[in-house]
Length: 89
Image 1: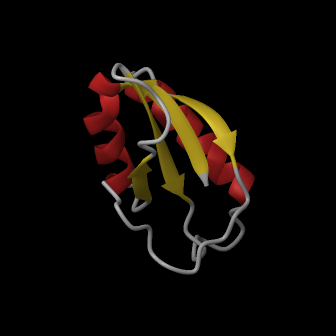
Image 2: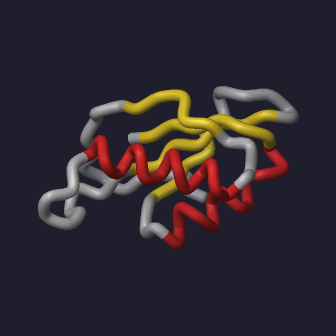
Image 3: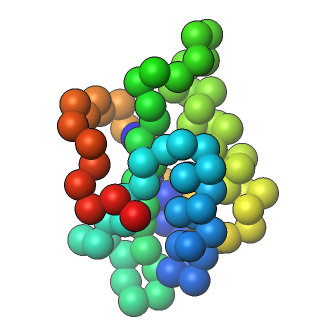
């Protein structure tokens, strides 16, 4: 999982980017403030052969930078979830 934080004004662009990349995205409502928010992107288990988590993490970090939404990678977690993300954006 990748956790990014940034201005709430850029949230829609981040959600659109995640959906385009076929990643589940969840806003972490217990973090952030009225102006900033945190989102969690789930790295799929069935990614292409030869692509590791580190490559996916760096690719998404660069995509966020190019998006210009102000979101930055804050946490990179190696946790596996067996069920779909509830409350996803």
